[in-house]
Length: 399
Image 1 (cartoon, rainbow, N blue to C red):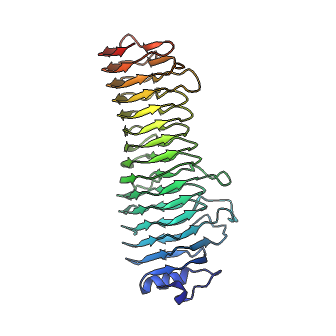
Image 2 (image 1 turned 180 degrees about the vertical axis):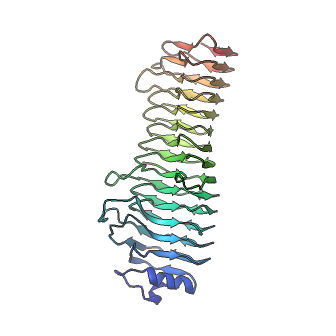
Image 3 (image 1 turned 180 degrees about the horizontal axis):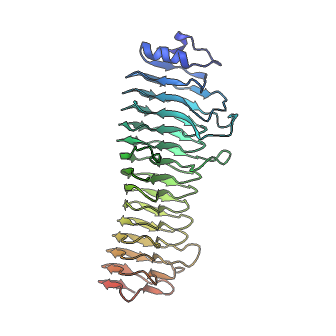
């Protein structure tokens, strides 16, 4: 049902007309410039409601000082917001200075099995898309979320959230934004009692954000668990993929990621990340840096400005299996694979330092029980391996 049949006119709030159109069938916002009052917002609050933004439809949030609102809120089962129209937030017209929760689309408690597809959301005071309330089965498909003040997408309380495709780029790039200024954040709201579990992010792009591309965060007494596959994370001011949080449970399987031109390709500061396959290259510091346990399997890491892999203190029991780390240290003399944590293993891997690198593998003083097994480790300027007395070296090929 076209919202103009229910009284919508350009320049006036379309919330009521859109709600009436959705109750009558499904609400269609035609091409044109439309306005939504954030104090009201468009609400999908009955099961099965559907909102369609047609090509050329632009829905702009009216200027406000409110700290917490959404242009569109989904709070009922099986609702859908579909594009390819655009929602424009009030980032550049906001009249207040507080809050970080002015979202483009917000899925809240009650909004189980919501679908948001092919919509463009830009320049919101908070997040482009926000998923909360412990909802089940949210599905975010081919959404474009750009230049938002906080994050492109935040999942803060949900089970089975699935993100397929889409671009979540340039967060924080207007006016400096507000932390964390990331592409996609899986991050339980602390003390909410809600988890972020069984999530998946497939073939997404999270690039050119001031913070991390994709972050997986744990919180006390809460669980963050899911999979990231085929992501492209390029040019972020933080890590391409980031794990953090001092307490709580975290498990993140990251496969076939392309991480380039970030601060770090991967930065694991909380345990529970497994990185499989993928290509991590040309980052401005380390390819992979970890201060918590991380597992790398079959990953190619090259042409980063510092070490290919740095396992810092705290990254105890980390492992590299079938990894190729080569031609790093492009802006100084660093160790190709630098181990400063206990009980770390390099197995079946290929370590090929550049001529600028100091060592192929260095096990630092105080790092105990390292194992270097069945790997090819060629020399840097100082040699192939710098090891401690208890470092096990078996089946190595060194030049």
